[in-house]
Length: 327
Image (tube, rainbow, N blue to C red; front, side):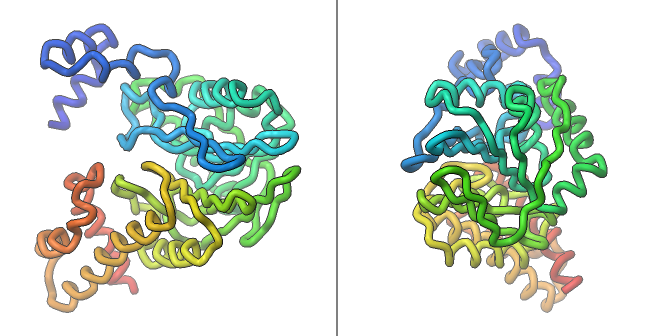
C-alpha cells in the first residue's frame, strides 16, 4: 500500500487526476489538488465571540493537502488580530491572511506558537512578511530548538512529504519567550499561557482565551486522530490534560481534529491512560510489545475509528513501553 501511495504522490497533478478518475474516485476528492489555495476546501468557522478557526484534514502531510493539516485559529480584538498556529508553509499563511481579511481589516499584531512541530508554525513566514512588527510568542524550549535548526529540518521534511508544496518557506523565529501562567493582554482580550516541561514535546504551550472560554491545546490533545508521541511523554501529556480539564473553559480547539467541549480532553486523556497503564500491567507479566497489542486494542473501542488507528497503535505501544521501562 505504501508503495502505491508513493507512486501516486510522484505523479503530475494531471496524471494524478486521471488516475483518480480511472479508479472511480469522485472528482470532488481532487479539489484540493487542483486549487492553488491550500485552505480552499476548509471553511472559516466562528468558534465564539472573538475566535475563529480553520480545521484542516486529519491526514498526514501529502501532495493533496499541500502540507495543510492543523487547525489555525485567530482572535479579533477591538483593534487587532491574534493568530495561533498559522500552519506549515508560507503559502498556507498567505491563504490564512486572506481569510482573516474577509472578516476584518484589522492588522495581525501577535502570533502564538504551540510547539516546535513545523506543521503548526512555519506559516508565520507569511505573517511576518505582511506585518513585519508582529510579536511572536513561544515556549523558551521551542525558541531554543528552532534556533538550533529544527525549523530547517521541518521544512525539509514537509517538502519531502508534499513533493515541494511548501517550497519558498523560510524560518521566522519567535521573538518573545513565554512563561507558565503568563497573561498577555491584547486590547480587550487576555491570552493565558499554560506551559509544560514535557508533554507532546519539550516545547508545548496551551493558550486560554479567557474572555471566550476557549482553549487552544496545540498537540497536547487530538480529536478523532491518533497522536504522534515520538518526542513526548505519556505521563506528562496526561498531566497536561488534567491541567486543562481544571480550567474555566467551554470550547477546546485541539491540534488536529474538530473542536468541541471539554470532553475532547477527557477522551484523549483516556487514550493515553489506557495505553500507558495497560503497558505497565503487561510488562509485569513479561509480555513483549507485540504481545500486548491485541490486549490493548480490545480496551480502546471508543478510539478505533480515529484516523490512523491501525497504522499507529503498534508504535504508540512501543513508545509507551520504553517510557514505562525508564520509569
